[in-house]
Amino acid sequence: MEKGQKVNQLLGMADFHYLSARILFLHILYPTAWHTSATAVEMYFKMVLFLKGNQDTRRYGHNLAKIVKETGIKLDPEAKKIMSDLEKSYKGKKYPDSWESDVIWKDDLDRLDILVRQLRNLILEQIPIEEKKSIQDILKILTKRNSLMPEVATRYGTANLNSFSLANQSFHKFKFCE
Image (tube, rainbow, N blue to C red; front, side, top):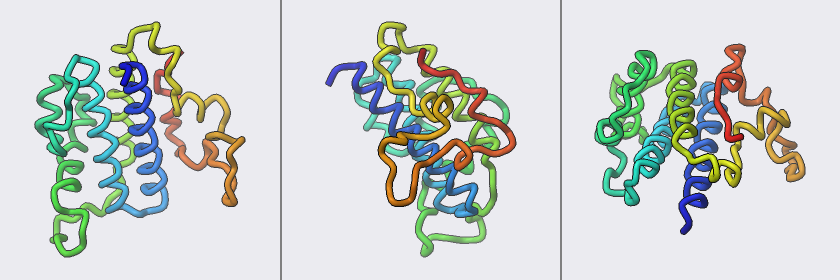
C-alpha cells in the first residue's frame, strides 16, 4: 500500500472514531464514548509513529501509555489529564462484568477535543505538502459543507455539523489539509 493511501486511511478512520465518540458523549453514552475515544486517540498516536517511519504499529497493541511514550510528544496539560481515563477505559473496563467503582461515567469532551486537536495538528504538520492534496480530510469536509457526504443520505438523513459540535466551536480550531 502506498504511503499516501495509508495516511488517508489512518486519518479517516481516526476521524470517524473521534466523531463517533463526540456523538456518544453528546448523548450521555459515556462508557462507550470513552472506549471509542480511546480507539480514536490510539489511531492518531499510531499515525504519528507511522509518519516518523514506524511501519508496523501493531506491535504496540492497545497500550496507550507505551504508544505515547514512543511518540515523544509533549502533551498539552489538559490533554494529559484525559490520558489516564482513556487508558482505564481501554483496559478491561468496556464490559459490565469488569466494572468496579472506577467506571468512567463523566463527560470530558472538552479535553478530548484538546487532545485530538493537538494530535491532528501535529499529524498534518508532518505530512509532506505533495501528499496533503490526496488526503480526504473528513473534518475539513464537515466544516466546509456543514455535513458529511450529503449525496449519500440514508433513511436517517445526513450528519450535519450541528450533530457533532458544542458551544465550544472546537472544529474551528483544527488545522486541515489544504
